[in-house]
Image (cartoon, rainbow, N blue to C red; front, side, top):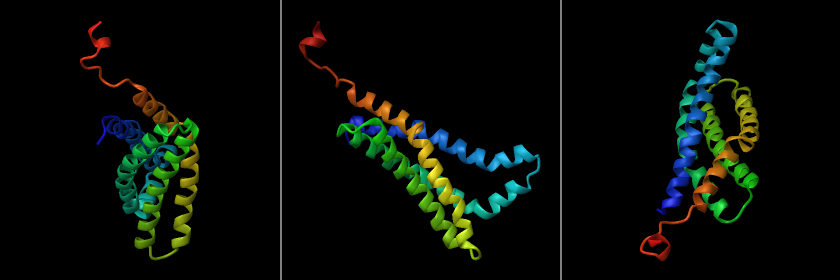
Length: 159
């Protein structure tokens, strides 16, 4: 695998993983912090606990795919905003489809109602990450791609 592609995937992981994991943790703990009671947090974990684990695993795979996609878009000369949008859509589509698939397989009652929050989350997360994390990742990958390659045994290296 090409060195700059590896660095692009690593960038996707280094920026995306901490933010994504902290978002999942915050989503679980915010009800507890706001109300001071853990009942809503227990309900969230009871309803979406297994799906959340699937989301985190899918997230790690999606960051890999998103890093490759962003690298290719930047190399093709696509704009930051288009690269960011594609990155965000792909990553969020993978994680929320996985989440919905697990909900569909594990929930026996009210499947449709249980699918509404993840669908809303997909739309909100895609919009937010397009204009924040996605742009940052696209910018860093562009910087990686614009770095000159190593200069070995050239006149410029000897000067």
